[in-house]
Image (tube, rainbow, N blue to C red; front, top):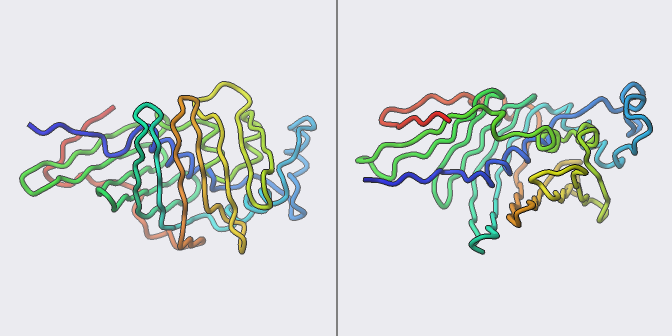
Length: 237
């Protein structure tokens, strides 16, 4: 009998949603400062750095993104590293398609309410498997804000933002969280997130790098719903 392994670990699933958080936008003025109404609500809290404010506006205008990714996951328990590559598509407000092509194929799709984690069969004699979850089961308000590029919203969720380089920022939640810190890198040419390194309280780590990034209508045709193929075992969680 075949023993199923989940195609995407809890670490990588949270990393995927932590990425999709770095992508939407909150009300920010053209001068790189928060909208006055939002600033008033924040009771004098520190505004996000100008570059991150520019990222917010850029993602809000684009509304969608496609890219190729490479991901490295490091397990603190076993000390091993897992490398994977593939493509991703995101569309506002919370649609996501994350397709791993190497070393083993796999697919994560979310329509904002439901999350599908699909592993195709190893060969034609086997069944595939899809795990079905509520999207809220693997998301947090903090990670949602990060994945959507909503840095000002993330600050409201208790996030500290520190500049650690000309185009690099260290983000750390103030309150207890599974996420210890996130390091965000912005591309030189455009205000686009190109790298995200996530450190967790348990010592696990995930690093995601993007290439061939396209923003705008590129993701409009991507399917953000999942139709279960024949010969697929369905596991609802």
